[in-house]
Image (cartoon, rainbow, N blue to C red; front, side, top):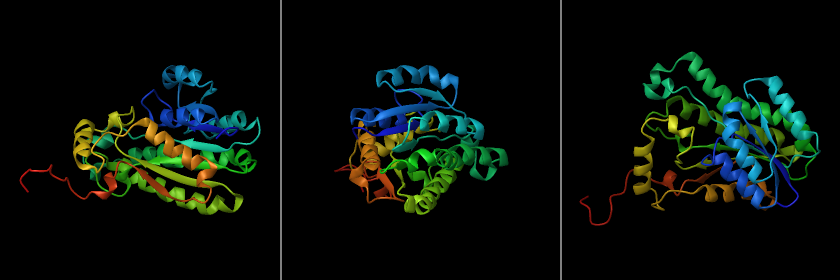
Length: 261
């Protein structure tokens, strides 16, 4: 990715998926800028940005004017070769109860930040993306988009909408040479995931169930993202690529060898 320039939105701390992608892209030779939602997150993201010599910008993704200002800052230097959207949010109250109790504001907020922000960012950055001959946009999904997970609730619906958005954006922007894809990551212990009740139990169950039988690493996710952001994947668009150790293959927990069946 030497010579390419991109923006990664959603770095929260050293455990965030966005950081794994930003670091991998920088190690592959890309010039990376980082964007965070607010000043509180900037405190933790700033040392990470400095470690890869990346400019850091604060941008409220629920504010179209702020998104426009971000696009002006990032696109002012010329072409933008890639955009990484690694943002998701739902009120904790929407994840702890029954899905049928989802509130209207909670539903709207989850879809706005987790899904619409991808559309808003891509639209605002279109002039810079159009100046690239290898423009690639990726976002992050989870298996909860197509399978039911306890306490995932409205986030599962938001991720399903996000994957549909990837397909529509890919069809819309493909004629302009802009590719749009998603990585569906396995369960990672991130700041946003910590808001999901029962995460520790979910990760323990996944570790015993998935074909690889281990936790995934940020480096593995980052390397998959570099593939989608680079010209090595120039024929791929509109896809949701699973980076989950095979979690999506398994319909039920597989008992260990020798256990009663």
